Amino acid sequence: MVASSAASTEPSGRDVELDTAALRVLAHPLRVNVLTLLRERGPSTATRVADELGINPGAASYHLRRLASGGLIVEEPDRGTGRERWWKSAHRQSIHDPAAAPAEQREAGRAYTHAVALAAADRLRRAAHEVPLLPQEWLDVAAFSDFLLYLTPGEVERMRGEIFQVISRYRHEESEATEGATPVTLHVQAFPVPGTARALPSAGDV
Image 1 (cartoon, rainbow, N blue to C red):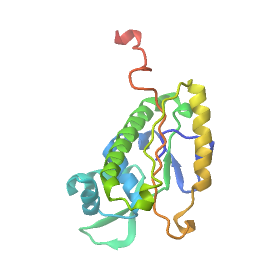
Image 2 (image 1 turned 90 degrees about the vertical axis):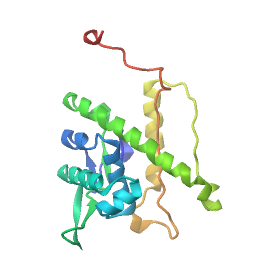
Image 3 (image 1 turned 180 degrees about the vertical axis):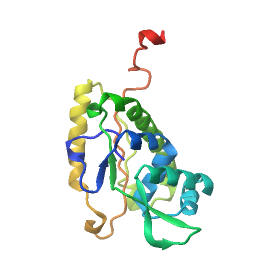
Image 4 (image 1 turned 90 degrees about the horizontal axis):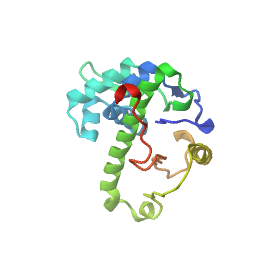
């Protein structure tokens, strides 16, 4: 899930550039996490999704149907029964670049970015609970770091592009992964310190 894209994350045949309708479907952090779960763990059912995310099956089923209506997930063929439907992600990654979005897409794009940030915070919380259980070899290399930098928007854009280029060198399909590889989530977050760069209200809001 990419709320801000750069040259190194341009869509491949398995990626999707989100249109306005898809952005609106994903403007919900739980829906973002359901889609992320399918991408990380593979096909699943509403019951399995509910168990993994700690929600009730009815809610899971609703969010799966909404994702399907937006073309973001599809049913797994030849699997399941009439009572139990299996779903899989239709794409490897969703991409939205606010800087390149048309004006009519900005409101939906902002809501989507908000949902992505909230969903990422929830996944980080769940990962934090597993830190005491990590094997030592993973604890030795896991990173939970933050840095205070003083940058302009242009400098953040350049740094983001450089980071994405590094990530692209390590990005492989599951079938190409090194033996013994485990799915690893790498969060890239760059944002103004809260309270320091809020947009000024427009004249109509005063």
